[in-house]
Length: 486
Ligand code: GLU
Image (tube, rainbow, N blue to C red):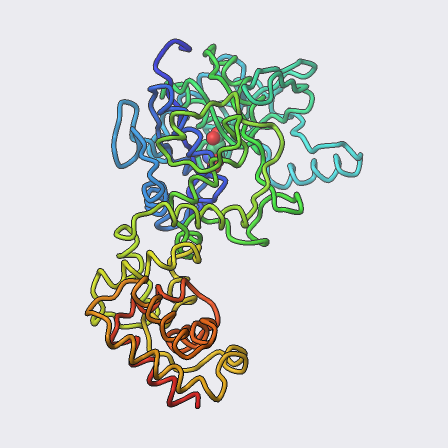
């Protein structure tokens, strides 16, 4: 199997959204497949009917597609071993469970919930480290089992774990891992409702779908010995395991919804770029061995290796995500940001039909170094989209003195003499000329110019603003300021 085409899978349970931890698992599987000319399979593990969420599968698929993690085989794509929805494969799991019963590696259990509850209490009272089934039903004879089945008694099928054994496996990230079978419960394989548990369905599918590498979160590490036993009991070759480090909050607690957003769609709704989110998530436990942190998906696919994934938990640092978002924004062509800006303007209720695409692209270009998100174009430079309605108090007090009105009138007249579409240098030399003529420092005009055109004390280059606004609008804003600030 190891020499076959590598086949990996992302096997989420549809909980309603794609958790960023799930995105990291999906991404590493995707990158591994790309890097090794393998196949990336999407399998939906929907055997827990109590957790069924309407629309969850569509949400998952949409989130993966938005991130650009295109899978080769999945519920909506087909593939050699589909349909890739476990709920549509119940017979297969049942048959396999019965095969284990046949071989003595699994057994029927008819214990009632009341008995199991009682057992748990006794074990807790006896201070056992972990509640475990006591193999009560293992002693039933074949005839007794047949009679109970005929009588229609409720049952589950359990794994028959032999005590006193070492269950070991190697893991690319965690290296050698060993469990004591005394600590492994006789796991339910088929539940009372006839559905398989995660363990059985997962192992059967990984085998039947020819998965060569199981790459998943560390929270599944304690399930792996049960899986190893299943592979051995079926007589199947085991895949290679790689358990990815936990994702942690900055206080090193496990990443949870309580401390912030965990769903990919939350980040999308907040205006993060998919490139930034994917780049950020790629670094949660992996690095290429150098200082480079800015990556596109295709570059990651060339660099990624499971051998370079760390064991230590990875801290989810939102500041770093914000920084990467800004970096990705800066790397984009203004034309690529245009539609997003229009969407944000629409969402903010700001009309822009009087603005040309070139105007908006100029705004994008001059503010690029000052924003991390597209919506910040509106928050940080509303004056490019709306008239100036108020002026920064401090700047007004500091920079607008009794002479300023006359000086600005002079500046405005000089601007009016410029050609139709002045460039930065034209405005700059006009301002310098006026300052020299009036025998004042350029600052006496620069700050009032910024205040008049933007209403703010800071922003992009002071001559960038008139270039974007255009000469007529700039002059109008200076005239308005002269009237209103005198
Ligand atoms: N269904 C499990 C999950 O929700 C899959 C774990 C695995 O990859 O084996 O993550």
